[in-house]
Image 1 (cartoon, rainbow, N blue to C red):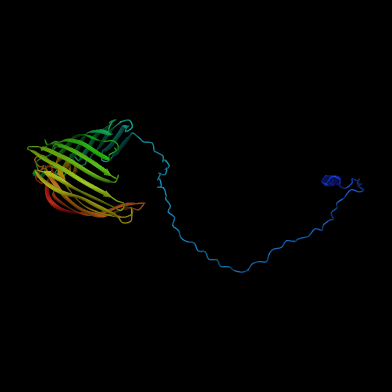
Image 2 (cartoon, one colour):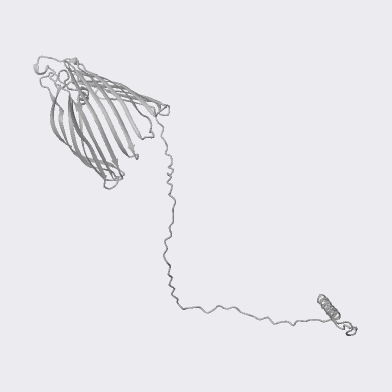
Length: 420
């Protein structure tokens, strides 16, 4: 309150001074003013208004609003998505073994043994393997000369060259297949007074084989795979027959879009057989083919151009397949023609009880095979059903030679129709 009184006094003094200065000279006479009481300004107390807030009345009127939005197409450019492979969890790799050994024994007097071992791998730049097999049986105590044995030894190796991604492979093998003829009269055969000893009924095929090959040991930038190889063999038996074989194989494949292969194979297959006379059977092959793959179908177009005795023959190599229910069901069909050589090695591998000396006639069997069927994978089972018709010209058949004491088989040839 004292502060307010001081302010009011200062205002009155200033107003008085202004009035005094504003009077012209010689105006009112000066006089003294006596302040009897200081001015006190008082404000009466105001009564507070009490205002109570309230909600406005509810609006119960329903309103329908219609919006009209014009359609406008705005072009949006998207960057090409980048596809990245999903990382797969690494599966546990089982520990590998470099070798194995199998031993067994059966009746009658039948030992079995097999051994295999491998050294090196592609990372080391080489690999080498050996495989040995022996299986035999002997029932001579009950039936005269009823016995056989099979012994096989194989050596294989591959050397990977540092430049060009090429690899050099080689193999060497030796096999002895021994059988004894059966079905003859132990008392002397058809003559009745001639007995046969073991050397007369024993047949042993000794086969020495080998080969070298040059191929691409890894994928190259041109997507071309190739293989150039030579295979040799020599077969001899107990009855003064022998055979020599030479097979040169040149194969190349070019891949288009990683799924359409174009292949070409050139082969020369030479055979020389000798007993009392010498026979030759030489085949030349030119085999081009192209396979086109799509998601739901595959078609292969190829042919076999074969030359034999200055004669050329074209045989088809066709196949098509279509997926009906994806991988669960697919239908396929084809037509394939080929030559199969009937020489001492192939005939004795199929039937070691054949008669050899003076009884082998080298020929080619010509096949035309028409086939079709269905195949698929149901998840828990994989199936393949096929029916076909095959015509074979000069098919090798085996008949028992009743004029032979040893009851061996002779080879005859005929044209047959095969349904399977």
